[in-house]
Length: 250
Image (cartoon, rainbow, N blue to C red):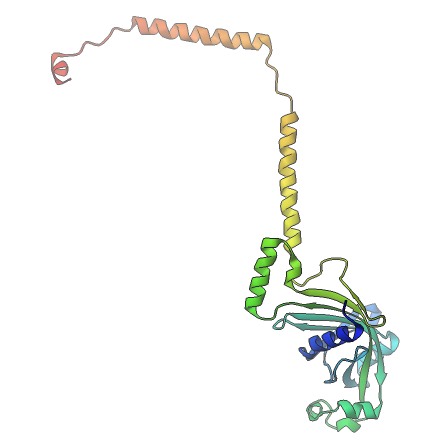
């Protein structure tokens, strides 16, 4: 079993592959709203992730009303996906802002790191669910083929939930792998097979229709009469004589 440190390092490597994340907050009338944000280039310490934003933005007001958020990371090329659940807080610490600041941020904050409207969103992480599979198209093709042949979709990649508060990780209760559909197809096939077997069992149990004695006698009499009429007609018909020419050719 992996230690908390090993789990944290693994999550940090997965997050490092992905720059832009979708931050989901609870907006007006309880509706969930997601926005793309760039994660600050700090190695994940197993406790927090950070984002720069404007202090007067709607998401800051939403976080103050409802601090519970979700941060979703997705990389199709790396075949890596993470869902981070936690609580967000607004941080105005100038030392922390200075530590994360870089010149690329000037495009979004022309006044620089001393901009009074510049704040950090600090997400205290509770749990992380991640999916990590083969990154290359060859690896994806091979693992997909193995999964189809063996029926074991675990080869498609690793899917675990890590609780950062306890340091424990576990497999999710159900199958929620991105793009997974093998099990549902197998279930449909099993259903069809069961239906066919049930139909055969019903057909075997169904009683055969009984033919009454009167009906059988009537059918036999009709057949015999038809045969006798055919013989009488054949006897009355004269045989055709073959001509000498025809006989000579035969």
